[in-house]
Length: 366
Image 1 (cartoon, one colour):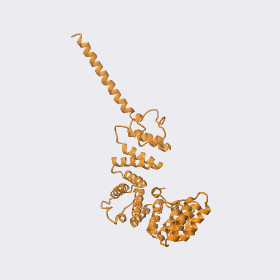
Image 2 (cartoon, rainbow, N blue to C red):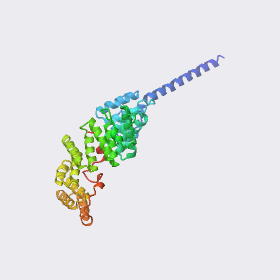
Image 3 (cartoon, rainbow, N blue to C red):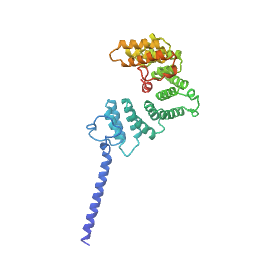
Image 4 (cartoon, one colour):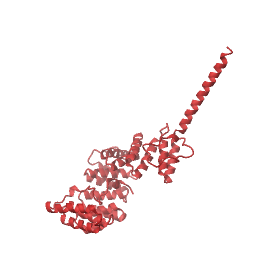
């Protein structure tokens, strides 16, 4: 008996020691989990992470997010991304939606819309009731040309915003849905503007215009609401209203190239070519302006004016302006073979020239 007891005590000691060591390792692993984050991470696209981390890892997701916010305010977006991704590495995921949203925001600012879409979509999936998450996901999907997915996210955003204002009977399936919208200072205007752009792309111009006007009732100086409303009037053939709105935009924002380009397009359609040239030269070089007048007047069937302005574009910039040469060759061929028929329904969303702006540029707030 005297021989066995020491062995039992020894085994008990080893068992307690081993349990303590394992417990200590597990605790240490939890505490340092954030510092061991794998930065071959799909949502990190910054510089090498060597030296980005501080002297000690964050102890909680909240601390990691606070560090990321501080880095972002100090204009160190790589470090901010690093910290927000570290916030995702903790077993407790109570701040994951915030981290994903902030990651998405940085990528959107950088023009990395694919990564922004991944991050925003995850935030919206975690917190389905957050209006801004759904809005942001829809906006980047529209920028990527994923209009169907964008519309789903944007309609969900608008539905939540209408319900927030007590409008539980709002129905996006009705043709009159745009006229029934209620928008206030807390509404995500960029989401409504994005929805208006989708309506314009589907040739539902009256709905688009109702949405833009609703946004302007909240913010009468909203640059994207004004420029998109003017462009929508132009697409629908309402030259008078298009001119009024775009002139207002150029007065409020004299450096806005979109507003001047929109105004130029209106003047081209009205065959006011000198007014068009004056407007377009606020947004681009003389050679580009002359080329665009020649190009779009060709699409309008005014081949004589087209050839004239394209030749001027070439003379203004003979060395490098190959686009005008291509357009001139096409215009001269059409001048001989085609009747002067207006093609106004075929060039509203033309993307090949300097005058027409991308979807991405039509959504962005100032």
